Image 1 (cartoon, rainbow, N blue to C red):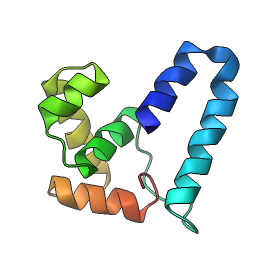
Image 2: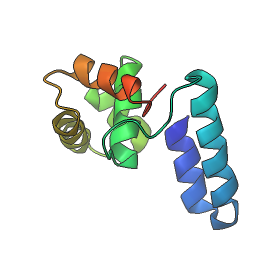
Image 3: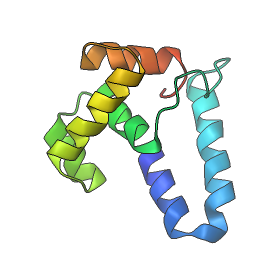
Length: 103
C-alpha cells in the first residue's frame, strides 16, 4: 500500500502532500506510539522492498509488483540489510519494524 501511495504521489504532484500525510497517518495507525523515523535512513524503495518481504513475497514477486527486475529487488534488499545491520531478510524486516519504517 505504501508503495502505491508513493507512486501515486509522483504521478499526481498536486496531491503529493496529502498522499504523504496519509502514508504517515497509516504508519501511526498500524504502529501506534512508534515514530516512523526510528530506522536508519532507508530509501523509499528499500522500505517498499522490506514491506513486501514482510508479507512473505519472494524477490521475483516483489519485482513484478514494483515494476523492476528481481536483481534490482535483491540490490535494494541487500542495501537495506546493510543499513539495518541485518544478516537475513527476516532480521531486516524485524529491525525495520522495530524502527517504525514498516508496519
